[in-house]
Image (cartoon, helix red, strand yellow):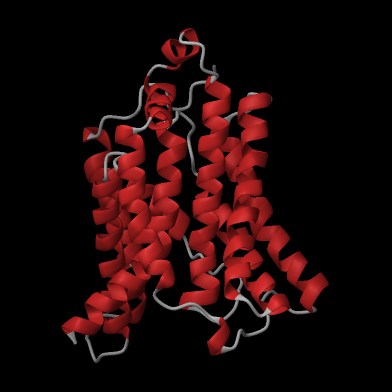
Length: 283
């Protein structure tokens, strides 16, 4: 039972890790990112649709990452070019994703919100999990040892200093947001063509916000953020197990455990974390 719980934890952490790492690029560069939920949702739909049409899950992976990136670049246009409010813009795009996805499935698949079921042989298994874990290491090395990683950190901490050095803050933030969208899209793809066999309405179920909470809980650092994702996924796996066992706890209470832990983590730790100084500030 313990082994099954740990395996479920690793599998359920995968979409959170992708999305949280994506959010890390955005927030470390100084752009508030509460739009992960919408990026994951459109990525999940794109991945399931592409896999259905082509029969190739890797085409689905590419589609999920690409559509997530496009969605993030739309956000970048509003907040970096037009200088729109970052929270309002991200919220609007989240709402647009929730409305656009059912419309797409109705037009393309004539369904009430879901895509056709993907055959087992066309789905991915542990590949997503290993990709996510590898990206944790890659992201850590990129931020610590590369010039672009240094630019990202300066864009979030001291954008004026980066601008004075002749580096475009807007370009650095745009590239960071593109990475955010691609990673969040991969997180959505892992839901629809790995953990599940199709896209279903609202299948992200708040995971984008849980990923953001993990990012804050992890102090905007890759390895602690990864640990936070594992914690949230463990609670999620535990509540699934509890639902299937005889217990005196009402099932409704069990179902809210992952979200309750997320709230407690945010309330208990947000005030003690060092927020990037340039977060949310236009240049």
